[in-house]
Amino acid sequence: MFRWDLSKFDYPNPSQTAEIRIRLASESEIGSAAEVWYEGLAEEEGSPWANYLKKWTPATAAKWFLDSKKRLSAKMLVAESSRKIVVINGIISERNSGKGRFFTGIVVSPSYRRQGIGLLILHKTLLDLKREGLASAEVETIQGIPAAKYLYPKYGGMTLQVLA
Ligand SMILES: CC(C)(COP(=O)(O)OP(=O)(O)OC[C@H]1O[C@@H](n2cnc3c(N)ncnc32)[C@H](O)[C@@H]1OP(=O)(O)O)[C@@H](O)C(=O)NCCC(=O)NCCS
Image (tube, rainbow, N blue to C red; front, side, top):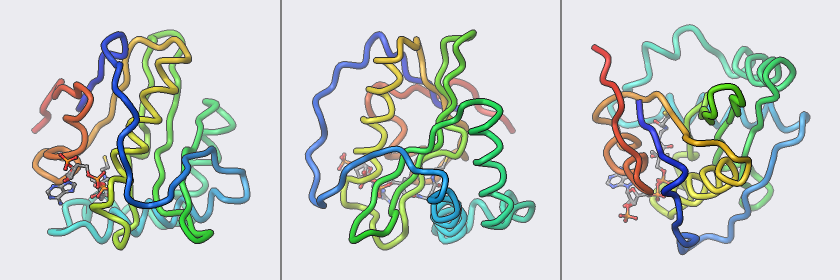
């Protein structure tokens, strides 16, 4: 689990190589977002998500995302390149606890990785949550994968808890 203290979040926009704009997905785009999520996790090197993905398909993931939107006012941040969604981050703002939770994790389409897009959506997510007045942001991930080694430690991300 990674946590960011949003009171300390004060970082300039990251530079980017691709022309990418982060925005909220419409309801009709949730299916594409679910495909990016499923394929992006499935194609991570070394298949760290293989076991977790056994209980999901892109269609059931889309249902989960839509249900989270209805019940928990979840937001789906996405960015597109050439009219294709290439990165997603699903976010739930928990007003009571003051926490923003990345319930999908940040997932970049395999052929768009290492171009600064993951960092860009992380920055935008943390900025939005801070502007909403939340105190912290959290994500659960797997120890030792690229997200945990290289992306989530950015902007003051701290490992909070390591589960066996
Ligand atoms: C983790 C992930 C989101 C990173 O996205 P990305 O767009 O490739 O990351 P960026 O290009 O923004 O890179 C951010 C930083 O991490 C580094 N980085 C990213 N992937 C790396 C890798 N595989 N090896 C070494 N460094 C890496 C970059 O060099 C950059 O660091 P720098 O700014 O100091 O140079 C992407 O690899 C992914 O989608 N993985 C599969 C899905 C997943 O497991 N998500 C986590 C769910 S909880």
